[in-house]
Amino acid sequence: MPYLLKTEPSEYSFADLQRDGVTVWDGVSNLAALKNLRSMTPGTKLIIYETGEKKTAVGTASVVSVNASNPKNPAVEIKAGKAIAKPVSLAEIKASKLFADSPLVRQGRLSVVPLTDAQHKFLAGS
View 1: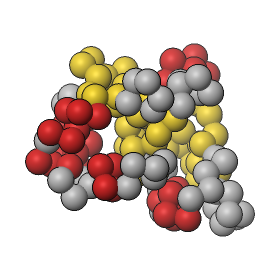
View 2: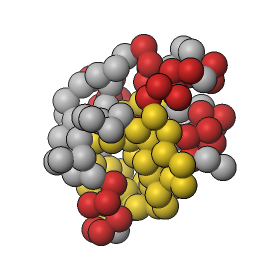
View 3: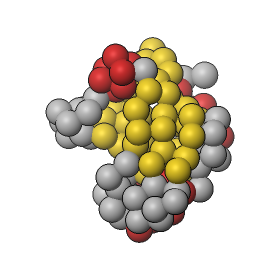
View 4: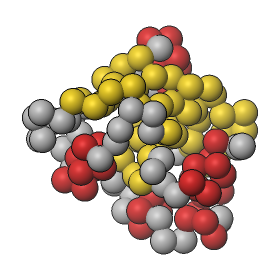
């Protein structure tokens, strides 16, 4: 199952991830988001979504490893993918029937959101 990871670009942007190549995605506190992080496995496809003023899906990534030894703070190592050729705004996401029941639309504060394969394909532009 693919996931969408939300990030505040002023704290850590997709450009930062591309520069670093690999980073550990941790520091999540929401229980549902933690559950989503713990359920990831190496190779899981990711969409990076920048919050704040942008509110846009901007890039892809994938999971390298998951260390869930501390269930309250699982550390998921992710690897940068490519920038999305045509970033997808929240307005476009909300307008798509694919996301009618998505936690991305229904639970706006959820920072780690499960996606269907069709949703991932829509956001990645593939």
